[in-house]
Length: 533
Image (cartoon, rainbow, N blue to C red):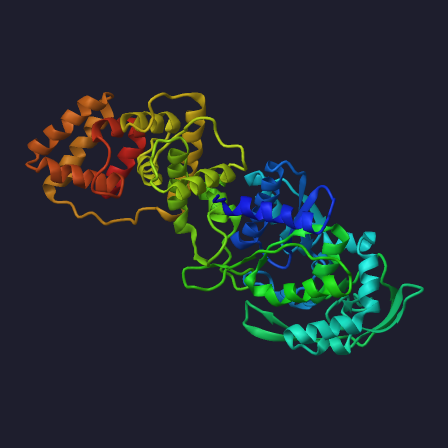
């Protein structure tokens, strides 16, 4: 029997749990939230897909929990494009120890984590948030840190065997925060005192960073400080090559997907889990990256960030979740211009779900119906709602009057056959979609100002129209007056109408002009007409 990829993943997790004879409930799925830069749609997809798997487990009758784990103990590795250059002074410091450049959160790391949390909440994803900084300081990883420090040589050999890196053969996989300069990647452990859970360290390493604003490489040097501190409830952190393993073990994680770019780190952490922590690592799926239209990976640091908040300015939560759930494998090129197509695809899925559009393939029908349920987080609507192409809604938005915009849009949708009955839910949907396309037009669809060269007859016709608008209140009567004005001034009526559309809307066609001129409002129309005179 064919299953949608999320359901198939959940079933495989359950079967694996049985083989491993685990009895832990809830089954925990996790995603890591990077806190070193502005979260983008790729960051969001990691979280959304993990939550989808958690929902699928619940749908199979098993209690589950989705943990969003913020890597906010990581040191800042680069100054992201567009952020202030003073961050160069904070390179290699933990991001929760750096002030918020936007000034609204307690730290840089908290601000970046908040942006993704905000997006998750806006689309309805439920999660348990965990901060690496708090997890270390609360001692939740104490057991794992101790075990990995005691087996540092084994960690080093695993890293060397799987990646070829010799660094951790020579140094322990733990970075204390320097008490003098506050940096984390410039330190190394000298000696461990296991009974006291303490260590000696020195801040003498060099760290290669980058400022994406200037394009220059920045060499961050350790300050030379030597110190001693506890590695329990600490302000240090494990290296990536074993930190995943530590938290998987401590939090009993059963599933975590990962991006292709960190495949080597995941292999190492899986091996560390099995050989040192004696714990079977979580089940994984590897996904590929979202690319921009130039074929480059969407990245926090290089400035081509496409955030979930940007998407939600122009499209619904369901359209954003469609992007995440549509498929798991393969790269996709993406930018804001794709949003209208995803909005239309949500409508198509709805038609298929409710049997209003037929699909020949039974397999495709199963996939598309289940996809529709997942974009509504397994709580789909009970009956069909508004069906209107994004482009049609945009055309209506282009000709909105200053007042009564919702009523105007509803009237046009009824006239065009998209709406049969104006119920409160349909009215609410019209309002939501109207806001999306208005935002789109405001940001991308402003018509270019066109210089209109008027003949003497056209100039006289527009002057006559201004006088007519001043006294006429009935749209149909004004429509007739337009033809009369064209005739009196010896103009072809079709050419006259095209001229008026160009002046008023910026296109060569549009709605029935007489009623529209009244609906939009005399003041707005007369200002545009007088401007060309």
